[in-house]
Image (cartoon, rainbow, N blue to C red; front, side, top):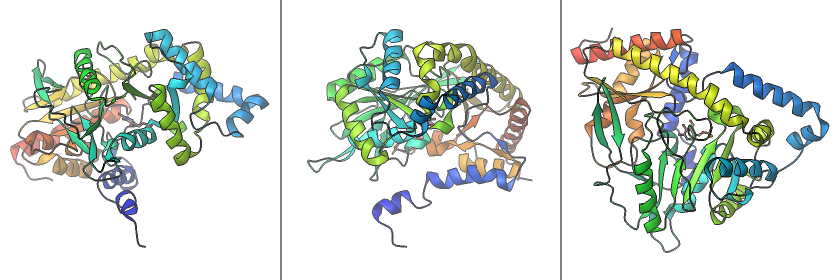
Length: 421
Ligand SMILES: Cc1ncc(COP(=O)(O)O)c(C=O)c1O
């Protein structure tokens, strides 16, 4: 088959797709594989019950079930649901929002594709713009989202070493040089892959820099406030007319319904909805149908605070404890887990690099994400990018403990130069 440039970029096995396939196929190759690689949320029976009961209620009511299954919504999304979302955010944070500031997407991933390409790539004046990541490592899922090459640029972070073998990345504003070629800034907060949460001061500073340049600050709140609230640090949510906040129902336990929520000034929402109409015609109705009532009575906040966050926070602590014990004596550090559901492990001076470590771990029966993929957009060579891996800790505890033991054993071998068994 003869592929177009688009086909070459999006339909071939390049880059991230290879890694994703590897992650996807691993269980077929080894049914006992400890899956610490993916971004799937954990299973919370209390959340599953809420969603199941709600779905049953909708299906019992002919009006509601017709609305769920038999209707295209507008490309901007169901107006009632958008109103519920706007009311909740206005009530919680005082942001001046109405339904006109909200658009729904088929998962937040597809919203990022549209937003990134709205603001970066070839411009009408013939110049090119990029999406700038002020703090790398960033979410792997952005990496191939640009319609052209060289779409992302990233700034290397500062590293603060903390007690208890922890560390924290900070935006290094002394390195953050933004010129006219930057079309938007983007951060995930909490950050996938690291569990970092940008401080309020960092967000305020980025907001100021974006505002001065007339470019948007895109904040990916897939794990953040006000839902699913997988956030263990003190942080204020941020929105203003120059911010595009992208939320998602996925990490509440609904990745299968594919619902993203874009919060932005009306002009941006209007443009986004136009593009969404062309790309998707309309969005799925299931996410809004399952959660509209939870937004209206604020139950979504309570469920996030009382069930979702505590579940992941307890898991994070168990995983940190296990790694500290197993890795004792090695030059490891763990990014301070401030949110999301991954640990980001840094093995300083790792003799084999993160790709080889990933492959060896896969052979041993544990799947992780090799960290170097998450530094896309960073041009300078920085040894640190080959010294990190991301591990998810949402699996059942026995599996996580097994995975931690295997990782520690393999890393110990790597440092001691021992050949792989
Ligand atoms: C940081 C971040 N943003 C966005 C997404 C996309 O999520 P979804 O398309 O399910 O809303 C993910 C998924 O893992 C993520 O980790």
